[in-house]
Length: 262
Image (cartoon, helix red, strand yellow):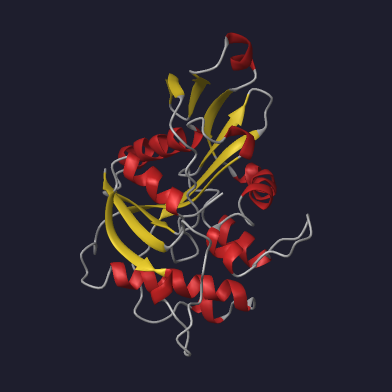
């Protein structure tokens, strides 16, 4: 798993799932069915999936999925050891960050296999205008490690919006994308993103934005025609003593903001 990140309790995780190998098979208002194109007929039977809009009833399933495939793998989380090693451990603040305003807005999507299992998650939301002062949810965050991540995301957001370039625009925020490790490299992430961009355009959003903390997230955005507009090297984001606050493993060397006009 990897990441896209934002502020206003919203922007986390893009993972590069490899070269797209899924064919669009059926288009309906809230669901699309996909079949992997490079497998044998027998293999395809177990590797079909459809994409559907997230509802509030999906919350527990989605959080369970993210605990398994996203929380530990995301580069920033891993860098500061946000999640303890125990298999069932989690970060309640991160769970709240993931679910707040992302599960009941008809903008988030899940990829579901023919057996009914979630194989991919894409959480999106409407981005609120940035504030000059530090948001209250950062000051009240009781987890010092997660507070570091929130402050980084807020720093990026203020930097991106410093000249007021996007003021007044309706922006779709790509917050978290995560794919089951057994389904990576099969185009699931790409299919989820393409469907989200389609929905965003239909709903009148002007721009889609993703703050990618992962190298692979950035590759996916670039492949989908996003424009890179901001980059912050982790080595340049330092504490009071001049030490980098985040040092993710290579190739995750920076957080990059991408946008795409809809």
